[in-house]
Image 1 (cartoon, rainbow, N blue to C red):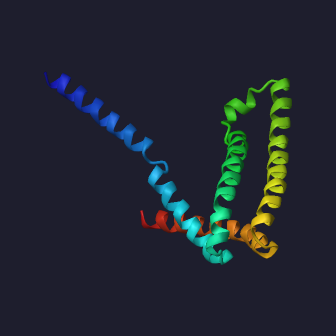
Image 2: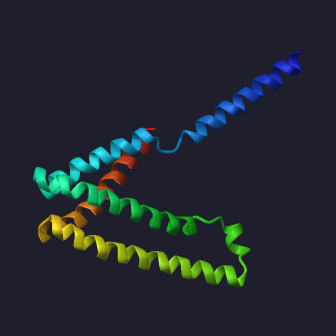
Image 3: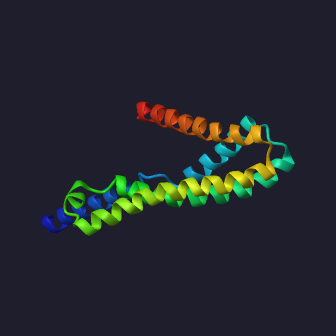
Length: 152
């Protein structure tokens, strides 16, 4: 009876531990919080008027969604386990190289395409500032993440 109880406790503990590890990643609430902060950050940095913001955000969100998908493919390659990487065949290596380079080309094309759309909505000074604001916001997020890591 003690063995069954012990096995049950171990099983429940391991399930609870695995569940906790799965939840360790960013939650949907965290993404929403970051998105809200980004909107506030960009609106202040770009000094967006209400009419500009109304036209800008749907286009920017569409751009960001497409860029995220391209960057996800790039990161998949960059985070590939060494064991899998070491076992690639020559045709797989060739295909992976081409896909990797193509992803950067797609990102550049996307940026060119959406730059034209941004210029229809915002003055060129604000479009240029938007690119700076993206990097500044990314740096801000990294700093906040590091602060959180030090507190834990």
